[in-house]
Length: 405
Ligand code: MLT
Image 1 (cartoon, helix red, strand yellow):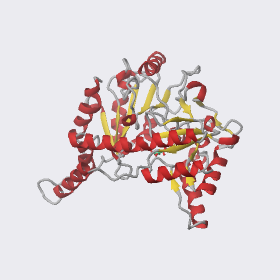
Image 2 (cartoon, protein in one colour):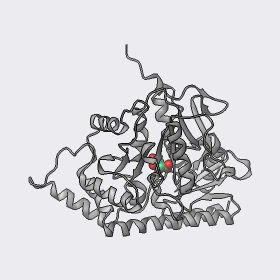
Image 3 (cartoon, helix red, strand yellow):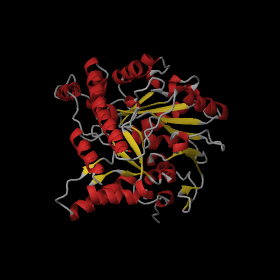
Image 4 (cartoon, protein in one colour):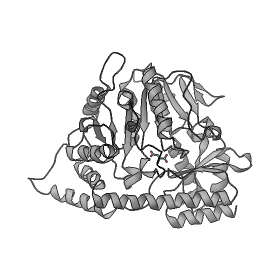
């Protein structure tokens, strides 16, 4: 008899951004004349840059000729892109990463969700709280999280590492030892960062306890301060304990194009000496047929001189928004953080409103959509996330609306 996977039936409600999407759709249907400003999901608004567009066109044109037509792509990625990644994202920063440790994919969301499949079901995970919901939900799907404790808003078998104002929204080393540690810096949702020496403590801890760190570096292009690491492989010993996930979405505007990559070093082994890199290669080869050639050529163009200049322009554009939001809200009396090394601003809700109360209040009173902090975990309650990925015009208008609240 057909039965659904019981782990999936344990999932709590719908995915956070789908819930928000439904609420906003219902509001707009009831209020069609309202001008909504969307600063909720971290989706980019600026077009792809000229160098990327040209690379896409050229790669499309190649498909019209037998000599340059491409069929299936190598499942781990084309060498031209893997080599460009190693040269620019690692060698340039003095990090030891090899092309055969780079796995090109359709984006960081799938990789951060899928990577847990290669670890044993009994592995315990530790996550920052608040947390990007994909890490927890995909472990719920894998049956790794235990029971949901309603009163705490937590899963019984997950180690939550509270990231609060008192800790600068960074986690502390957990007392209970996890097998898999999810870290994301610059952080989604709080926009916080850690310094290289702070990250080194995590690497040392993971090596000592024989845990793996899954390091989500999707927002590294937004780092503006010198002592904030762009890659976990800047830390000594990271090759034996860390996997790193990257995205082309937030730096180059590929949210709709889809491209990302994951690094799994050959030195990373489980307790019995099994190569984690080989398992991920096996999994990738079985379940994934490679990112499209055309898109990988666009990814390669990101690393060209012109491409790098253009994406720096995109990042500056969004960071001007971040500054505008930070300063505008602070001037309006809000307690804000983030937005310095990240495109997210984390603010305290006023008047002790819950995160969802503030969501409704903003939507109904000033037609602004943000993301309720509690949607990212219990420590996010009483907080709210705004993204800097809007247009300048909308961001400016949103600040004015906040001021008039
Ligand atoms: C977010 O808003 O947190 C992100 O855009 C979601 C994602 O990248 O999947």
